[in-house]
Image (cartoon, rainbow, N blue to C red; front, side, top):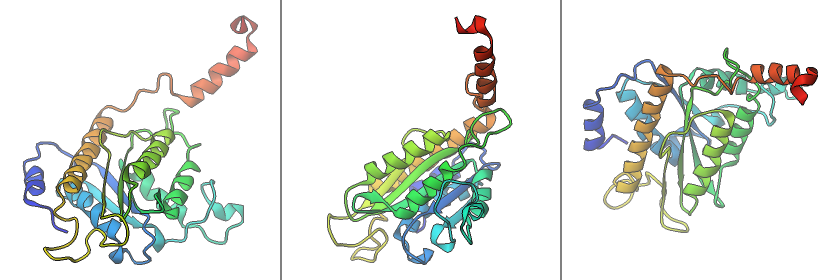
Length: 251
């Protein structure tokens, strides 16, 4: 979908420079083809806002890849014949903004979304050059679509997982759309008056605010990285070992 007039005006009036930021938008829809995914349509709102503000945006449709189950960086080293996650990780590692989209099934995020989070967890042992989690300096957000309740529940589990890994979650870092309870049109389906959800003020407002918050927080972290005093894992390990080996420190 195209951005609405107000969304475009916000982009045109933007006084901030985001041109050195990178974002990755990851769709964990169960639709085999990205072009048939309702979740992609809402993810594209955020993607277009970022692109109009000179953010470099990469799009990943999980089902375009064969991602193995597991919690190791490369599962071909653990019995799998193929694992595309190492290539996906290179894109995520280079990103300042990580935006995950999922549909709702039985009140939960998709199985592919959980697979992605498990694979991200498998990278949590990696550290940056300051001894912090490799995810420090990245910001995370969540986009949810469906025909049943569960937007806040799915966003809660996704955003909790991301912050636990080390990403920063800005204010109001989620958005979503759900139709009338039960079978019915999904986001972007054709209906009388135009595509469903495109003119939903609540959804468009939250999608817009989420995207700007992601960009603002990424800008802040890029210019002012989180200090490593107190969160340097290498220093913690060395300090604890020294305390353990020194009887004076154990008193």
